[in-house]
Length: 93
Image (cartoon, rainbow, N blue to C red):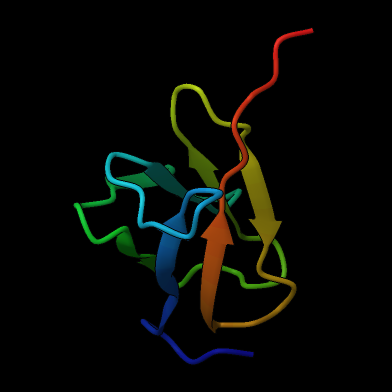
């Protein structure tokens, strides 16, 4: 179990299907006992989101941008996690 006041966080880069970084992606960290926290990626696609005292067994992070499919990942118990995400364009039915 994490000690008091420890930060649980996720960091990385969001890219599009060509591998180029994506600007303006909403990255949201969610933990059931706390309000969600969101940031937008800058031009380099980098992000870092987290919370103090979040439960890494129950926390998740999601990635959303208009025109792209939403992606969500569970932290699966990892209190710190570096990940790169590739968003896929939405397809019309």
